Length: 66
View 1: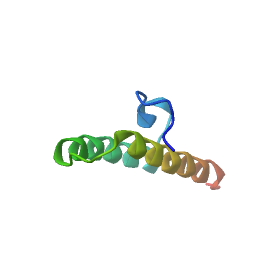
View 2: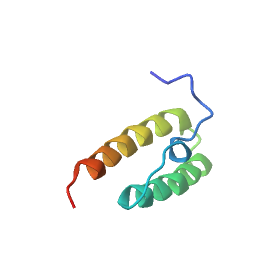
View 3: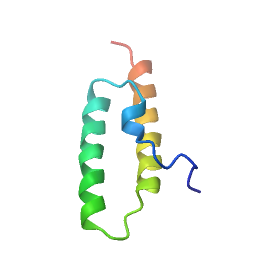
View 4: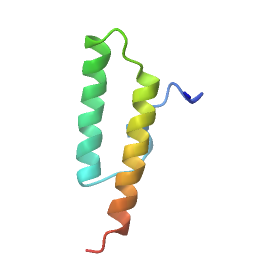
């Protein structure tokens, strides 16, 4: 189910760094590409998926001892 938060880009909402930040940059450019290339693209679903992945990557990064 889509969230009611349709105007927020999850990439811009979280402080991220390292590989997570690199992935976020990729997702941001991929979002723009898909939006222009695919008429059936749903940015809300995409943003929800990206947010889930970024949250998980951030958690893994925090929990990994250095």
